[in-house]
Amino acid sequence: MPEQNLVDAAHEIEESIKIGLLKKHMTQIELSQLIDEGTSQINRAIKGDMSPKSLAIRKKIYKIIE
Image (cartoon, rainbow, N blue to C red; front, side):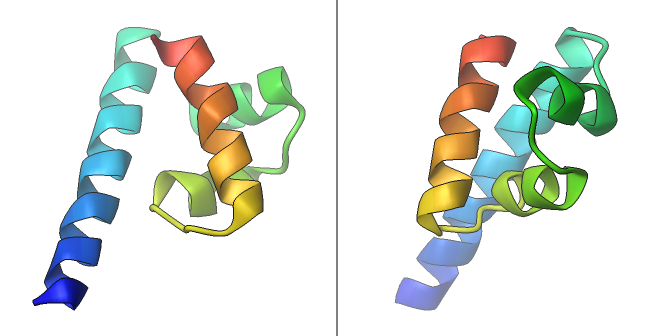
């Protein structure tokens, strides 16, 4: 059950960021250039990776899409 909770949380993170990008008419590449991070790192953060780097990237992303 805890594993499913992690999967669900990662899916919610991905969904909310992708919706935010769509509303801003922005691609992941444009986002990566705007926050000066690599596209691979952006993708990992969007997919719900829980590393400190991904958490920091998501904070930057949320500032832009909200």
